[in-house]
Image (cartoon, rainbow, N blue to C red; front, side, top):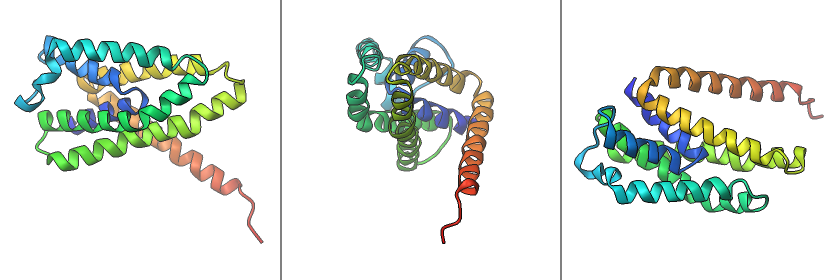
Length: 186
């Protein structure tokens, strides 16, 4: 059950790097839901919380401006997987005894995959099909999903596990359907 939290937080970082870090920082500072180990307690610092709030606001607004949102996604290509690696390592270290290198690799992979699908598939498709009009609503939805997924990952990880299984099933179904629709090559 605990490892689901690590996967959920990393997936959330693939959508927005700073929201799940801020959620973890605030929950660690103000609740008993997360108890960070000594090496990660800097996330509870007011300086880090303030920085994460500022970075969240910058990303929030940058992601709503046409053309800037695509530049933001390019910049976030390094930041989101790194945030996912940090979140996986923090939560895996807190919740389980997974080796830190494995935790970092898993976080990079999960957040990087979500970010790649978002920035290389979903966002370009939304921009192309709506002439950019759908970018702001989709960006807001991503922020809401990242926030809800982050909170649920810590508070009710079983719900996140079910959500991740449903999403994985839908992706597998979609890929299978596309492969079956392709005509055979002569």
